[in-house]
Image (spheres, rainbow, N blue to C red):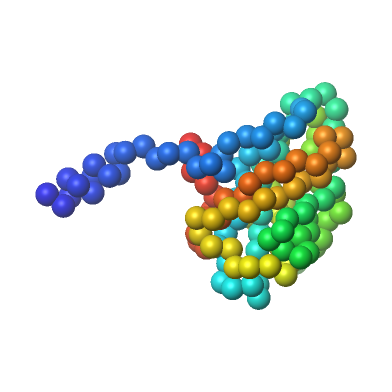
Length: 153
């Protein structure tokens, strides 16, 4: 009987996360905005997001702001000579007709000096500033500490 119950739960299709909803800003569609729960405020948080540019002109992500952190910054993960680093980047190009993903192991936003712990199930606003599209405010969904992203399937 327990096996049937478990199998029936596995058969229920998952619901798409609120993080999967796209926010349109001109030619840009911003979706998949999420973060991981934090352990207190002593370690930095992260923000991941997908940006699709349906326009014919390139755009550039030039900054990030959020009340969740005193010093949010754009970073990339780099592996050189077997050593991983996460240098700060001043801007992230969003070419026309392309999709750019800020995701684990790649480009991402670091949230230095968190103002409060990021608790699983919560949300916080994030404003992304683009060279052409201007500021776009979206809501980041806080997933579990071990999450690899929302289920947008």
